[in-house]
Image 1 (tube, rainbow, N blue to C red):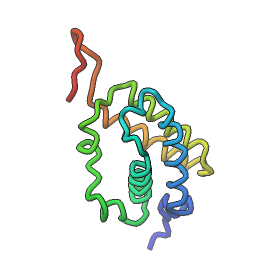
Image 2 (cartoon, one colour):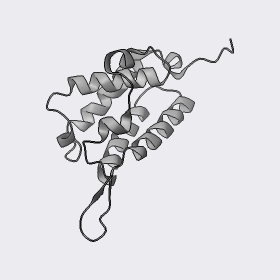
Image 3 (cartoon, rainbow, N blue to C red):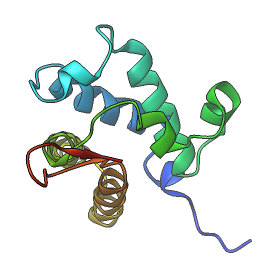
Length: 135
């Protein structure tokens, strides 16, 4: 065993991700760009994201057991995600990470992941001649 601990373990487990996602969805609930993309009740969305993040960062595979493989692009395909939506999402998640008690190295790792992941979900691009291009 190499002794390397997962981010999940280093941040104290699932409660860290539960709190992170609570902070994030608190901002989403008030965001005019993002709020229309979510269901009226954010309870399930909050739980799903917290479980996904916990699993992704080394915690138990509860998300997979309940929802199957994450397939992020497929799950987000029904929603038009352009630069405005991505930027708003990333800003709220970045604020939530910065408000956490994560040590600087973990904060940096989380922010880098969210930057990359959010960019990969963009499926609507600036118009060429008037209409957005949706992939």
